[in-house]
Amino acid sequence: MEKECIFCNIVNGKTDTRFVFEDDQLVVFKDINPHAPVHDLIVPRRHIRSINDMTDADQGLVAHMLAVGRDVAREREINASGYKLVFNVEWGGGQRIFHLHMHLLGGWKK
Ligand code: 5GP
Ligand code: ZN
Image (cartoon, rainbow, N blue to C red; front, side):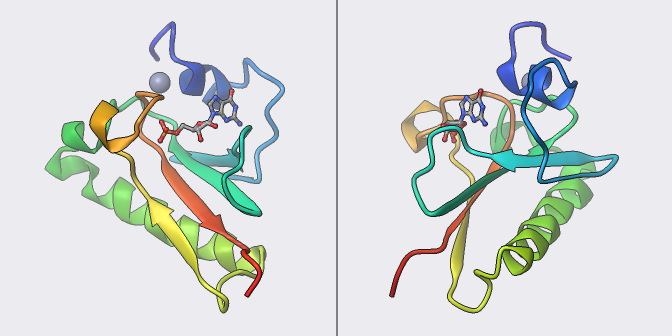
């Protein structure tokens, strides 16, 4: 766990952030500044800086993040209308929190 990492603090229950879903590998919570009607963050419990730092051993974890994103989209009933699963990678790619996470965005009106 990185001491100054906000997502490590959230994952470790050091904030009052409510989890939409959690398991042994990751947690899901609502984005504090949503960019879509549904905007959740899928966040591994383990501190990995970005997709650039993903190793071959992390492939199962990233596949699990995708599967959980799909399942949460279904639970939120945005699976049929459609959604985005987004990784921002490093500063130029829009990443501002340097603890790996995937955005689930959807729920726009037709
Ligand atoms: P990034 O730009 O790094 O891909 O996305 C980071 C996201 O985390 C942003 O959409 C931002 O609104 C969200 N965020 C930052 N701090 C917090 C926080 O303390 N709680 C929650 N729920 N979301 C946060
Ligand atoms: Zn972290």
